[in-house]
Image 1 (cartoon, one colour):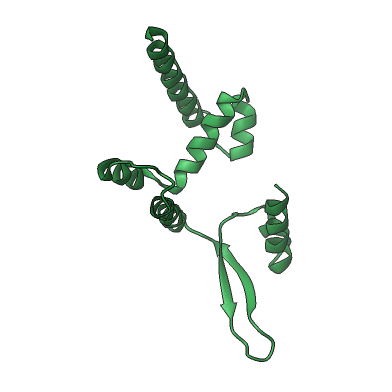
Image 2 (image 1 turned 135 degrees about the vertical axis):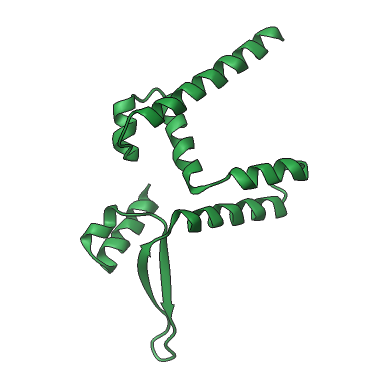
Amino acid sequence: MMALAAWQAVCGSANDARRADGPVFRRLHRARDKASGDVWTVGAGLSAQSVTLVYRALLAAAREAGLLGQIPDAEYEHWRANLTAHSTRVGLTQELFAAGEDLAGIMHALRWKSPAQPARYAQALSVEANAAARVVGRL
């Protein structure tokens, strides 16, 4: 969290104070100057499509490094095709519900405008947990 706070402070001081609470993933621009070295500036937030491409590149790097084990190509392609920028929001919503956080707090933290969608994710989590419990109960 300290690294995130430091990054947000850089984003705010580099541009304007309003940006400190803005997107975490941002464009970085580098200008090369032989005399004074590289000059970096922080740009606008990345689009959802750009974040998706970053996630997919990280997934490919994890596979190359052998961090995904021996998963079949078809399963990997399924993961890759379904991995989006929204995946993080969905996963975090489900993790917060699983940790016992309430709907109002989750809506505030993740800036959900309506309770309908996070409630659906909580319901899906509940269904998965019940299905897993039934399978484990049969063992």
